[in-house]
Length: 292
Image 1 (cartoon, rainbow, N blue to C red):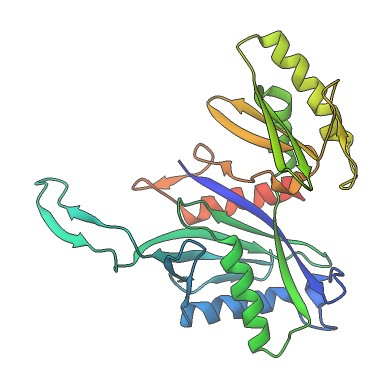
Image 2 (cartoon, helix red, strand yellow):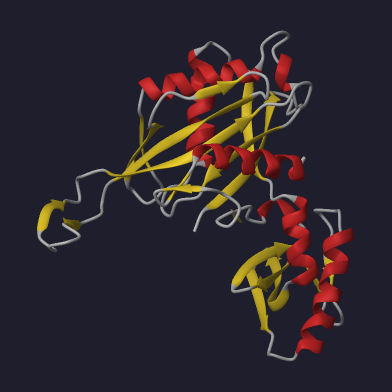
């Protein structure tokens, strides 16, 4: 299965104002800065300890490719981490080739595409999703650190989930409601969650789904409580929709928390069982057009 994560990024100044990416800092083009950044992390491997205390590295597997006409940068990230023990065996004989020790780096390569539109305040980062290899935090931190090495400390990159509208709409229109959660934050009692799971009654599930979709489509205030039927008012309401065995969680208030991974397995081409770079670039650009 090939999944792509879609992120939208902005460049903010110290007043949290969005900058026009193609001429921020009065004259610099973020496409050129991103290209310099990719070249930098290819030569300078980023190593760090994650929140779980695991040693990790982050770099590029090869030099990036810059498409000036379409204003894209593409290639493959190389992400590694320690702590995995295992064995590598010969597929035909099942004989041991070598052991993987906890101190060894377990590495994976995965596709990325950066798009910096002309005269726009937001761009896109699309990354192939790999289990246990997150990108958002390390990409933000590495880029912002790179900017400081250039002597530019008054701008920060802000990366956010950006699921394409058609993808979200497909779940909202055709998804089956699995469960919903009423969340209340109390200053004394802390966070309280009431979870309601739906049975196989299609009519009931559709009725509750329709009730949830109304505040999801219309609620805009992050400070107000969300009323729900006769059950009270809540700080957040989440609900889970499923299609063909795949599920996604939606948030009435915080739409940006909706995960943006899209299964593109049936939309790309393969060579020796591996997705071709050309087809990954093509589908990434299609997704960006849908998300813009």
